[in-house]
Image (cartoon, rainbow, N blue to C red; front, side, top):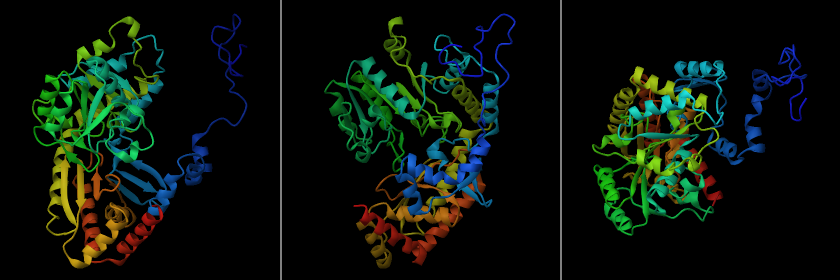
Length: 488
């Protein structure tokens, strides 16, 4: 037996003539039984996180009453141990575009595992990456090639590297309040100081207001700008680029030999009612496009950077540079199979059209409530990416309570809405960003009018409670105020 060979198994080809090859007996011991492990230790979930992972996560969940124990999930719903259903209007931050455990994606993953493919040999060309790239590019006719990584932030990192190398320029522009990831490169173009603080020095960069063409022109004239990276609809606050901005920015960048990067990690693959959000503006053709999240089917992490031929050929300019940018798990068979299944389901089941139709219905019904509730100031977004913003009320009684919350910490009222939506109505949502009075809805793209009815009814009940001076809701607000003051 060679050094490092597992006991109880023989290496194929190393056995004596006539030997059977692999032994049929597994190593001695209990073996691994996932079902048993979860049955025995699943109840320790919050303690395990507190001891071994990010200890602030369980603390936060306990504080706001989000420390639920979900037993199973399917489509747009979770169920707890008592059989209560919870409507998911968060979709794992957009990862669960098709909902949880879509049968077509599940079957594809079973099939790819059963196929026992010679995956990740590193020195061959498997068919699945090429097939997924072909299918993605069919939705992106002005783009030519794809690099597969493992996440949205990797897709952004790839785009930043490719843009800098292809243009020979160091600086990347981004928009204030943008979110492009948390690894060092993508953090350099993250427009939220709370994520950046303490991690400098970062890459050369400059923040611009979203939609400010004059600021963009001022920067590109300096001659050192490689690219502008932009979310067509910003996840933080759900702010859309003004009409015409992306096209004008693209023309301005190209005039100065710089590139346009569209970050479609959250907005892409149907979220906004088109395959990509940039497609809402006619004529916009980004040089690089980043996707991830929904491409995974909710199962296998994956990210993709799509780009123009000349960019890829410049980066991979010779055989010496064949591995100048790569990812150890990129293009793995499970991720590729999941991605192919997701795109197939989107086409077969009309997912993009559903996101547009149901999203318009949900947004319209919510917008109709702005005249009814003085605390509700705006409803915006596209498709199934919707922002609900709260603002300062007019009535004296409500204004006093609003001012109390704002003085402690901006964003507390939005949290006051999110909590009863879960606690009383079993609907999971999120506040759209730190210090924002905005709730973001990014449910699975497969929801129907049934889920719209359930959410609108629950939201209406919560707003009735808030405007009626409901004791429990404002009592919770005072608890949040105390927590905010204590954490200063």
